[in-house]
Length: 206
Image (cartoon, rainbow, N blue to C red; front, side):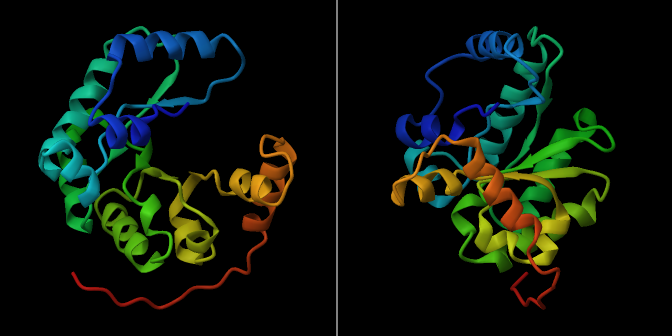
């Protein structure tokens, strides 16, 4: 279950609803089927988002941890709450991971934020994932909004445990098909799964 972070923070500069309201929605949807996880209410760190809020990367990281702590104190019907790592440069993600401290246990399923706008530059995504894995190779990473452009890179597919994207839905709508058809999503996932397993050599600035 997504927290709606991108829409809330980009359009409104923050969440219009409290942690308690979000927890109520988690409990509601947990009764409708199998809810694997609910994403904590994070704050992205792209420059255009910081301009919207007037805050720094470090402030967004602290606000993300604070929201995670608050949600963990709520009754969420036993649903797993996914913490989110935020930052922009690779080392800032490591700093955020250290900010969480022992809140993130070994083998946890953890989201990686502020990467969806970098699909056209897989090198940047690789750098972020490498930094996180160097610090905590035990984590199961989830890539928010990671599309085929990035998933075509073998390293990114291997580094991510899971990923999500609405690209399949947008493509179906653009081509006159049903944008809500689960078979469209299944076909998209199959295309990603069957990509040739190859790697690229990257160079990037530290």
